[in-house]
Image (tube, rainbow, N blue to C red; front, side, top):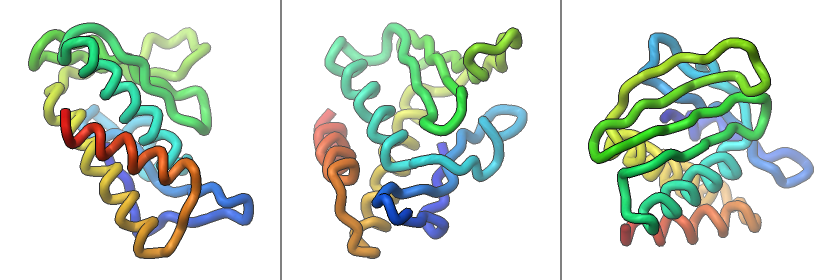
Length: 143
């Protein structure tokens, strides 16, 4: 998981946009420096991690979506082993399967969320989405 925090921008609407993508596949997913809404996306993904942890940790399946575009990731995991299906929703293509570490992937979500929060704080940006991500990140640190 990657976020280029130096490229975050705040739109007139108050939404924060910037590059966010997943590394580790043959090529970045959905693509290198994919422009999206990282505060919202990381909020969704952090919430999914917290929900997974509350059900007992690394077992089961999690669906992660990007906000802009039909890009999705389905994580099927059991202990340390995790298979990620990276795909375009509503597409005939089955997507790409990669094996990743549960701890590494979710650790990267924490790291990216922390970086985004720190950058928003440096820029003096405040919003409900930022507060929500901060709250979930604080809960995630205790997991």
